[in-house]
Amino acid sequence: MELTGRRPHRFRTAMAACLSVLCCAGLAATAAPASAGPAGGDDARRAARAVDRAEAILEHATVTARNAARRLEAATAALPAAQKKVATARGVVAAASVQAATARRKADTARELYGTTAAAFDAAQVRVEKAYDRVDEIAAASYMGGNFATINVLIGARGPQDAMDRLGLVDQVMRGQQEDVDELTRARRLARVEQDRAGLAKRAAEEAEREAAGKLRAARNAQVAAQRARAAVIRLAESRKSALHLARSQRAAVLAKYEQAKAEEARIQNALRGWDDKNGGGSPYVGGKLLMPVHGWKTSDYGSRYDPYYHVWQLHAGTDIAAGGGTPIHAAASGQVIRAGWNGGYGKYTCIAHGKKAGRSFSTCYGHQSRINVRPGEYVRRGEVIGRVGTTGASTGYHLHFETRFDGVPKNPLNYLPSCLC
Image (tube, rainbow, N blue to C red; front, side, top):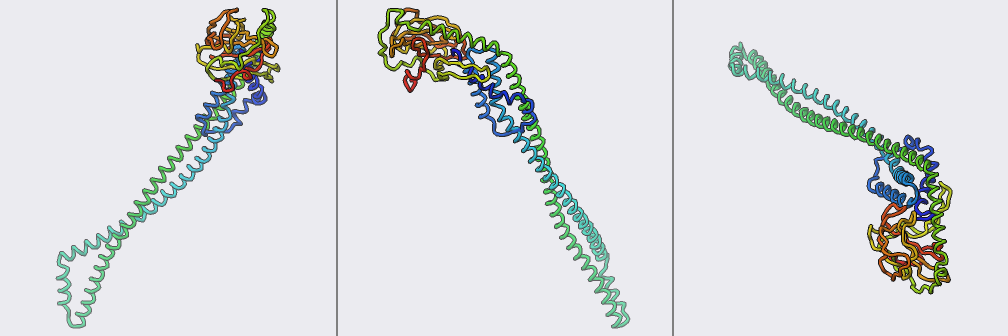
């Protein structure tokens, strides 16, 4: 447990840090640019750490206040990444739109080029067909005896000059026929060239069309992503606003719990102050460094913290050591059990007197146990199992709240535990 302060501190710190932001939280949704950026794992881990932090600082706040703090911490941790996603998504939309427009222009140009090339090919085909027709006529004439007709023309000449004239006419006819054949050859060659060009132009146009369609889809997908990112920012902003509103509504209840914790701390100090003197004096403590009471890991330090939201100082009177439920708790030193039972926000709570250290009664206390294995008045040895780790009282998870007290006044346990916490 944390006496007057334990977990509430970060909760209130987080809320105070967000006050100025949340008063205009509605603007965050519209002003925050977006992102489809690389949020993924880092964002999730950041949010998870924020939730853990909120749960670790609110052990004796109300359940409603704890829930509000978790929502506030999680939304606050996630909001920067969400805003970055909005900004990134907007940039992606702009870039994709430009690319789509460029690809569309490229496709239009390719389609026009294909149209021109296809028209040239059609014209070349017409020339080939005409040339074929002319050559067919020549071939038909030859088949029908065109050569005999030419000989007959020459035989019918009325003299040498007439024969020469008639031979010139025959030569002109022959040249014309050869030109028709040559024209067919040229027309076919040109048609093949235009056909190749048309094929290339068609493939280029089809590829450009596909590229344009892909770019358009990318632009539309980017727009959808941007809208989703913006919606996420709006939800986070609303979550932060509602969490802050809920936290404000819990002000009186949380402060009442703080007062209970302060009164509880005062009762503990009064009960432990001068216990050795009241009970026949105590021998000096000679145990050296304390034994680590539980095998686990430190999750919260000893210390006073100022709550800028509720404007109170809170003391976390010990060190929290997380461990699985039911993990054995060992006496940090030999001594006599002076408290063992339920104690408010500490849940199941045990205190052991170890004698005098620097002239003051020295004791260790163990909170939030699931089970207590000792009774008041019982003597225990260093390392003896005195209980089990739990989450009783004002606790949000399995851990041992461990305290070192002098005449009932808590001091930092890390000064008396092994530096390795092992």
